[in-house]
Image (cartoon, helix red, strand yellow):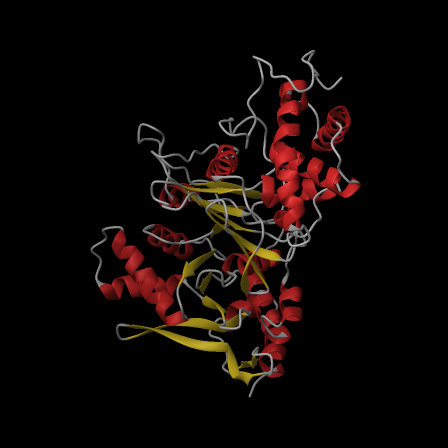
Length: 478
């Protein structure tokens, strides 16, 4: 039924199918399982610190033996035809038979853990599956086979999760990137990819990574964040959240600025909730991770060059092609190069409500970064002309920051007002004031409105939201 062979348990077969994570095995034998699928099976809910070192040491030797017997007993080609739940049930039955025939002395907990580990090796991401099943983890950072760090609540911790060796880690990295049609090896050691749930993945392999493959996963929560939840977490005040809602609804061009890990993509996802469901939206990303809920969305993704060094499709290629696709809004996951000029052109030519993210430490620096990225494209435009393009295209800059206590805050909601001489003029509408810290070292502060009337008031009135805007600006003014 499950493709069992006639080979006796405990012997090897000349036609044994390769399997990921077995030393020397193939990394593309089966598709990657999502963390959601793993969690729903009920077998990947154990936290990484609940297993003792003695149990891991004991199971490690037994696991290799049982794993080899399993591979000699089943046909992975048959497993590939079943859903993950059925495969896990089948593997559990066969592993139970192997344990009984070998007279292995395992407790019920150890046997269940053994089955879980083997299922994770075959179907999922091996030792990382328990971490992917946890919804409180924001980042998973693997520095070689024996060091796995996680970020929870803004703080980085070392876990007791380990791989067998660097080869197992490399096999898992290859399986992830092959699932999205990419590759990582010595000739192409750097790769961006994604998991099936949209979580962002970066892999850098030897010889560039000296101590073994380095794998970084930026996890998405299963419970999608909204502005209401950001208000609840204290990332923005209630009035500030309502202001962002108005900005998203009234088709203002928005740039979200922030450092690494400050929550730019999360905030961009939240703002897209207020886009009208009838609008045609086109997204451009290096690794598709935006989670738009509207029905009329076209998702585009860049492509690296192939083995011959040809076939690359850059972000700029995607943004320029968007203009031929009759978009109403263009959303760029991350602006990091010459595509900044093409995005500004789109914002200036009727594609109101376009959005993007940029790495910058404050709104003023965001303007400078856009100038620099345009210069990277080889344009020889005068500086004043470039700044006029920026001032005419961008309406609002939202600054996200990760503070020293690990918390994430929206520190500025700034409006691009226009030009004064050769300088782009900004005015803050909402700011976050740090007032000190509490006994636990957590930063204490408050969001407040500056009380300034936005220059985009007439546009808000065009969309019938002027009363809401007035209430928001009065609610938390000085």
